[in-house]
Structure formats: C-alpha cells, structure tokens
Image (cartoon, rainbow, N blue to C red):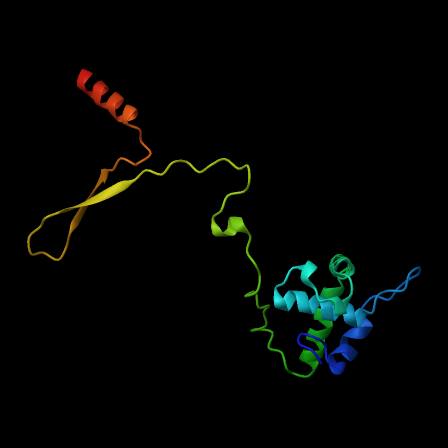
Length: 165
C-alpha cells in the first residue's frame, strides 16, 4: 500500500457512506478518488500535481467539491465518531480537529488585498532617555522623528511658517 492511501479495513468502514452513481456515466472508482484527495490534502501539493495513477486531477477536484457541498465528509466524520465512541476510544472533552496544516490567506499575515487602499503613513518616533544618575529606572520621553519620506520642501515650508508666527 502507498503513502496516504486507505487500508482495506478503513475502506470497509467508509465505503457505505460514499455516494453511488445514480444514472448516466459510471462514477470513477470511489476508493481511488478518496486516496487521491488524501494525497493532495496530506502532501500539500496543488491539484494539478496529482500523480497520473489517480486519474485526471479535474475529476478528483470535481468530486472533492461535490462531496463537500453534499455533506459526505460530515457524514463520514460523524460515523467515525459514533464508532469510536461505541468502542470507548474517544474523549469528547478533548476531541478536536488538528488545524496545523490549514494554510492561512495572505491577508491573515498582514498583507493587503489587491486594489485595497494603502495603509496610512506611519509616524516614526524616537525615544530619548533622561539621564537619572545611578538609578536603574529610566524615564523615556517620546519625541517626533522625521521620516525619510518627508521631503525637504515640506520641512522648509514648516520652518518658514514657524518663523512668521
């Protein structure tokens, strides 16, 4: 058996919970589809990088989305929870889904969206310590610190206006 694929015992539990082909074209092999989905989800690879042994990536992706919308994964999870509970192997106080493999969006890391307005300019501050002798406590006073983006024209304009007043 290959990495990330279902064992025969696991498949026997899950098989009855998967949808059957109603009519028309026969459904792709459900076990192969599920193994392909597990491969993509566990490896972190894009759908297009799915190995050829699983068939066309578009087919696998279509079934993945279709089964998600129809609640197939929720039914599988519920059935597995009921089975583990009956065997006394699940602690409902500690049960949780491990989200360490969930990829965060760019905006979750602080990046802005395309076309979104830019963040307001940052005011730069410098801290100046007041000399207090041998004391271990320092008093900090915040003072304005001109940013590099401030143009000379802006600084000279503000200097002239202060002389007039």
